[in-house]
Length: 396
Image 1 (cartoon, rainbow, N blue to C red):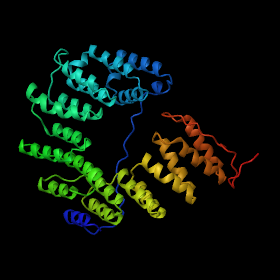
Image 2: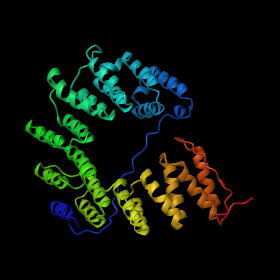
Image 3: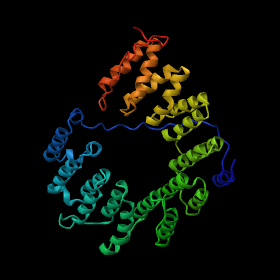
Image 4: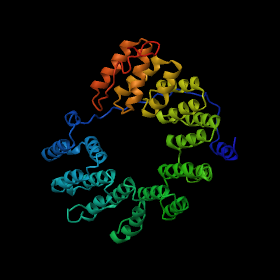
């Protein structure tokens, strides 16, 4: 165990608890986007229909999930002019005078990488008769981070508050610390933490998690254990993300046993592991070649009532197929369809192929049908892509 890991364990004061504890958590409900819009393939037709719905219904304009889906789809298609056309229309709606409504538009521009539009909208707020407060300023900073305009975020953070008589809060500092971390300016990010405290503000767990993430990614454990100590000094309680970040860093450095100790600690502190927590150990053990231990962690994930996600699927499926755990691969694939996760089509086809080879035809047919009828993405799965036989040979 490295000296940094040893110091970390002294800070967290590990306790003796069972290694894998099933923790019950509520499975969240999914808000499905509007199916009518999902079924439209042509991007121009999709944008026209979406815009029409925004104009016709104020109830539709409250559907944040479908807005997120629509703007992301248009951005992926590189149709920024369509995004501008749709969102600029919103300036004519009565809700534009409400800061929360305007903030949503600003953040959508950020999601699409259109930070200039978000900044223009912020500057236009007085003309739109919408009060400009720290909430909209923070939204502007977040839009800049989403657009990866990190230098501009820092400049705005320094310029606008005094100019507009805005009092910065911890969210403002967290966002600019995030920007500095993404720029690789970790020393400046720590200095920003000091400034935050000098200005009478209390850092949050988000502040420290942002810094921990950056330190682990860019410097390994160099300085990260100091951040854990600072959290205790500032009375900031660690959350599951704090532990996940640290356990993932430990696993990447080959300190899997130390990561397991931290898992015991977080459970003893009453924290609930999430899917990310279990994925860290599933991947960690698979990378070590210990597939059976990885499967144990997958089963612990299911017992905890967490939901497997894309990371679980992409890590598990190739290994499950390789070692002949076809029932588990089939069950996990069905879970992906049930939860509407978008996963790699080639990997789905791999499961179908392996089921056919093992004469599990009914199961293979079920997956092909699920691929065709999936509400979110329709997969073009084939039952006999290579006319495979049980032995894997091709038939003529």
